[in-house]
Length: 245
Image (cartoon, rainbow, N blue to C red; front, top):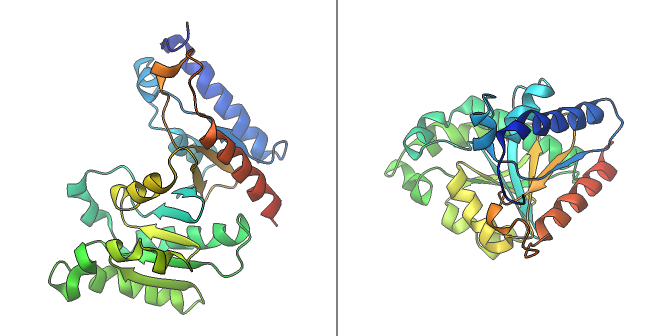
């Protein structure tokens, strides 16, 4: 029955992901596009599953991946993803920022065909810390890390206040935004392009894109579906495959 969950299907769902991922690794497929899965019912079947991204990272033996959502005119990657707000500041380390920035920069070149990507970087605190009066993460962690990476030729702008960065003046000349946490960057992107956005997993040795929405079980079988995000996910995967060296 359409829209009815069945935990007996969980192993089959994960097997399809495994086969697709292995096919990409073997060169049989240029990339993979994933539809939403219901994490809850998979876990209820007794299989620990936190999401596509983590599953594919383990399958491909990838230590660090980066979540990026994109729509027309805006790409937003995240330093941290699904963390409680109270834990985010502790997770903003120089090592994490450097790893994520390197992955974002490399994939902008290798998978999106941008020779010298310009990346705008959000601060963590309001007003990017207001010179240390609203937090010192920008001074002590973010700016020194960006400065080191700039010596390698990376075009990194920031740390900038998020409410300033996400304005047309700044976004007009950037290739990607690096936000410090989930709800700093994604609300703007989803407001701009919900239904026409794509989720891209950076850092994998394969191409993986996905829709920007969940399972929407209430719409199953009604015929009232919007395929816009799926079309964008397909188009993006195809473009990324063409850009790969």
